[in-house]
Amino acid sequence: MAIQQKLHTKLVQKLILTPSLQQAIKLLPMSTLELGELLTQEMVENPLLEEIPAEDLQPDQAAAVEKPEEPPKEQKADTWDDQDYEYFFGDYLDDGYRPRAPQEVKELPPIENTLSTSTSLSDHLLWQLSIKSDDEVSRGIGTAIIGNLDDDGYLVASVDEIAAMGGWAPDEVERVLRLVQSFDPIGVAARDLQECLWLQIKHLGLEGTPTERIVTEHLRLLQNHQVPELARKLGVGLEELKQHIAVIQHLDPKPGSRYNHPQSQYVTPDVTVVKIEDEYVVVLNEEGLPQLRISPAYRRLLDKGAENSDETRAYVKDKFRSALWLIKSVEQRQKTIYKVARSIVNFQRDFLDHGIEHLRPLVLRDVANDIGMHESTVSRVVTNKYMHTPQGVFEMKFFFHSGISSSYGESVSSVTIKQRIRKIIEGEDPHKPLSDSKIVGLLQKEGLVLARRTIAKYREELKIPTSNQRKVLY
Image 1 (cartoon, one colour):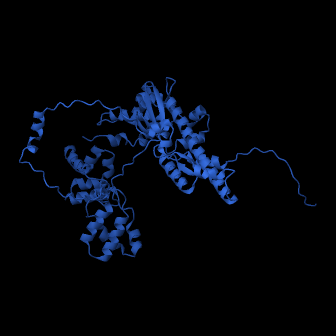
Image 2 (spheres, rainbow, N blue to C red; image 1 turned 60 degrees about the vertical axis):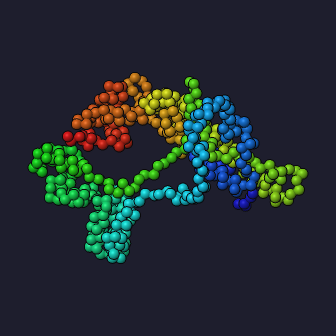
Image 3 (cartoon, rainbow, N blue to C red; image 1 turned 180 degrees about the vertical axis):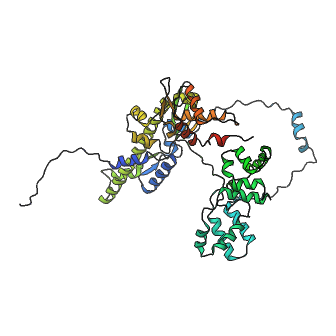
């Protein structure tokens, strides 16, 4: 059979992502800071893009940039008479007064030189290692040990693994490890909680006491608050046992954490919700975002009367198309964020009025149907975005939670239930903490029917220990 070439007409429906659509989708999940960096980079790479000067902004835009002039204050008459003037400045008006000679103004160092950084755990330990050891081998092993400590000060590598790093003998590693464990803070370089507490007890000179036996032999009983069983195994009374437990409670289970201070994370809200009279107004935060426009100078190169080469016109036309796509994509992004934020405000008005206990269940589908967009678009919008509300600053994802039906026919947000569980536990008797089953009974009286495993799951998400671990021993 001979091979022939033929033309066929075929009608097919396909979803094609145009470059402009791809760019709009790419911009949606970006935060305001990331978008500002992208626009700045695009202005560097595309000569047709330029930032609109403040004086060229529209009146409504300029109002966000320039502060309104305050009305001039009325000039108050000077109430000081000559006697008052002489009273305050008499020392400088007598004949014997002579102004001081101008003194030399010393130039202070810049403020950047006055900033200080806190000492890290590794720096603190390496400094002690340099003082306590002058042997190169010991310093090498000690440096390897210090380099394998986590933020809490625990050793995360075994002795054999450290020995294999430099070809050292395991006995040498053990010797240096005991040296590092004697450094400040006491308990550092321990391999588990038991060793960490034992090092601190040894430092206090409590070896051979019931306190040491509790840590080395019966730590599990102490963690489970099995006080009578613990007293029976140690052969001591409850009053004496309380003294030993009090010593253990004052030990530091995370000795390295004091040198690893968490860095403060500052969030710039992308959306601000302001209540004006009885209505909530959504305001987009565009501070830091350059207002872009097409450069008029380069735009003239595309005029028909301009004498330019085809290569120049093609280059300018390509950059003009890219710049136009970017401006439209940014505008579309801002409109989409506003629509989503406006919809969230409409759904969560009770939360804005009364607080977290009135947060209603909400899913992406609800907002998507409300604004006429796809769920994936809403998901991209709420990613890396924060909203400043009268109740505080929240991530936009915070407002989306599943709901649980109550016996009253209303859906209650899982966040509201977690908040209720937290308040129940905060108000319990510390000597007789509530079990998960008892919390289930309390919530059932309020019309919330939940399984015990659901309560346990929410309690773990709130990082609240079990009832046995919450029990106060005395």
